[in-house]
Length: 136
Image 1: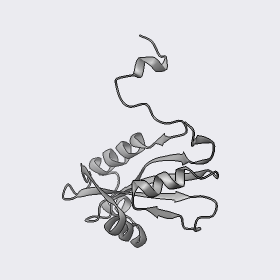
Image 2: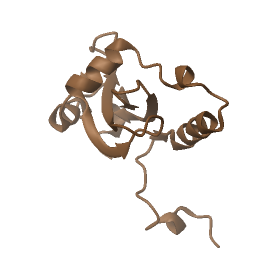
Image 3: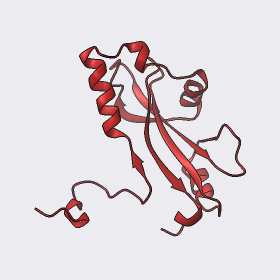
């Protein structure tokens, strides 16, 4: 068995350079909740502003909430960087994300999953946007 990057082709999409995926942390948190080591208050703690962004700006995913199993999680994307508000910018369309990706200054992009029903939230992935990565 080879451990070279080519051996992973076909198994799953190759991530962009600089992308950080938090699936293992998510799985661990959900497993700990289901084992009873974390309470619902520990994992369902979305701030009101994040819930508002999820309801008004988020994209509904096909995945059901791992905590309440009642509602589909919503994906919310935030971008932080130079010449953006200090609290970041909530992205509502792919066109807006593409426009920010063409900027010369590099920004940090974060995708968060949120359940509007039970307030579950978890950082799914982060990646650089724009700057030196725009030609990749």
